[in-house]
Image (tube, rainbow, N blue to C red):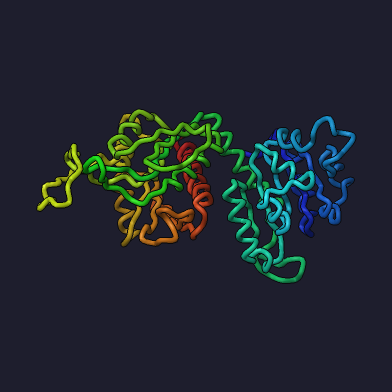
Amino acid sequence: MTIKNRKILIIIGGGIAAYKSLDLIRLLKKNNNDVKTILTKSGKEFVTPLSVTTLTKNKTFEDIFDKSTEAEIDHISLSRWADLIIVMPTTANFMTKLAAGKAEDLATTVILASNKNILLVPAMNVRMWIHKATQKNINILEDYGYMFLGPEKGEMACGEYGEGKMSSPRQIFTYLENYFNKRNFMKKKNLKALVTTGPTREYIDPVRYISNESSGKQGREIAEVLNRYGIKTTLISGPSNLVTHSEIKTKKIISAGEMFEEVKKTLPVDIAVCAAAVSDFKPSKINKNKLKKNLKNFNYIKFEKNRDIVEYLGKNNKHRPKIVVGFSAETENINKNSFSKLKDKNCDLIIANNVSKKDVGFNSDYNKVLIIDNNGKIKQLKKNKKSFIAKKIVDVILDKLLIDERNFN
């Protein structure tokens, strides 16, 4: 499959790699896509409006105050017109503007006013790329929902070698093929997903309960990404202060039993992601009155197992989701324990992480995980924002869904 009949808005930034935008335009036009461009002031130092207009067969936009089109309000009309916005090359300076939320020219104003996904294709000197300020901006932008492609390792215009070279037009085109193919698949299949997240509480008495430190952030981020792909998503959340997109149906629960019942009510779905840190045990009975500390013996509190939600989904013969994803929160023997969980619960994927680390996992904005699939493949994701981790997890889920669909057909 390839990209056809798409509307692509390309913002050409100020870097030597700007000339590659012309090759991408050629590829897109060759496949019957409509391309419009915004040429930044710095971008004009590397490519001309005439060359861009000649290739796109459309006007090249430059100025936010363009009298010839002022009635159209370009910064709104352009963003609404596009199926996707690409910034190439994305310079360190341009990323700084986006991270700060600036709207000082047509390019930054269009992006700030946009309701579409935005792909940033960075290019800069290797030292600029690894600078702490740039890396901080990347984290901010990923948290905002911007997509990144590259940079690659290679020789740069300055003569140095390292990470900072812009992805090639062919690489960008391939990325766009995958992006739109996934969206087409989601749209045609009218996919549904459920995501569980947060902790559960198992009350001992009206005051005390058993729980854990889960914030629910990772599951919320996964639900947000699924929703952005156009998948109808239900989020079942334990006690937390999470705020979700209005398009995501959110159900609030307290106990593991309540979560189990809500999961059953939500079925059937195509994708189930069980990111919640569900209590494995609960008191056999909840005391009506608060237990007093002067009690001589607390040993009479008996526990019983909660229903295993992941296992129920993985082994559900009637309404098993096409993809069942479990989470394995471990403090030791992460690989061994996670593989066992994958097999025992009949999951398609397990997301494993070490929750004994204070800087990742529970109650953190960051995570570091292993994605393990039922074919034995392991993908390691280094420490990063949970929003970034969520995008990578969803990419693996959707890739697996597409592969399984093709094999089935």
